[in-house]
Length: 297
Image 1 (cartoon, rainbow, N blue to C red):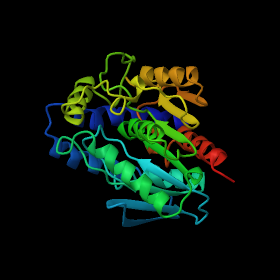
Image 2 (image 1 turned 45 degrees about the horizontal axis):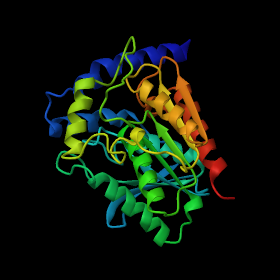
Image 3 (image 1 turned 60 degrees about the vertical axis):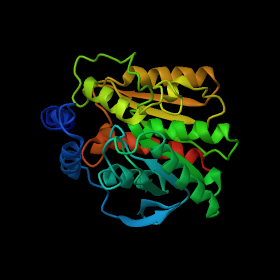
Image 4 (image 1 turned 180 degrees about the horizontal axis):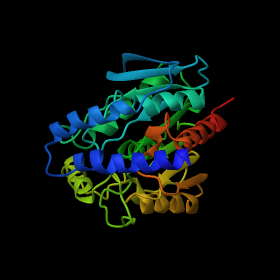
């Protein structure tokens, strides 16, 4: 009963405080400021440590939790490609470090509209390559990300595969943004977080002059064959539910080992509330298990 009441309270909070921020009429800089404040409620486990460094010419945050680093997670944060940072995502990064037993590397990649496609993808690729150059085997690297960062994980994997470069051991995505055309969106009874017009505006900011059907922008339009094992987690109360289902179905048809987990009555990237919600914590425990299972022994 307590968890039910907590979920209800958080849903109302997201709807009243976060959803109004994600409105296309608000200037991007104001959204960045307001969202940074909203994310302060998402806190990491107490035994996690964070350091700010540079890797591959990119500013990164390196997260450790408990010192048992069995691999490396390259985590790409969400934010519609227009806001967010490793700082706003410390909560989810820290909990994933704890549940996976891995060190987490989170790049502070360039954002639109100042830096449209392919800036974010180039930055993610630079950090991945730097890990390889530092002697980390691809089999010891996992990709993970939420929302726009989840889509970016898949775009990076497609680019690596097409370039015949070593692929990561697995991919884990939370409420991934994989179709920036937004032509087949789910219409839930309630949507506590996202506004479709805001997503559409950001898609054009990020896509720039490129067609939004470019698989490196919208990976749902790409050939997914040959990608590593994929875990998709999504809430039932979000407009991106159908995109996750389409992604899972296409990946399975193309022989990608795929697991889709739909969490009833939860919202976009609910994993942010792992310090409060039991189901969010359980979701990240499942994500950590998926990552550990596919790392090289």
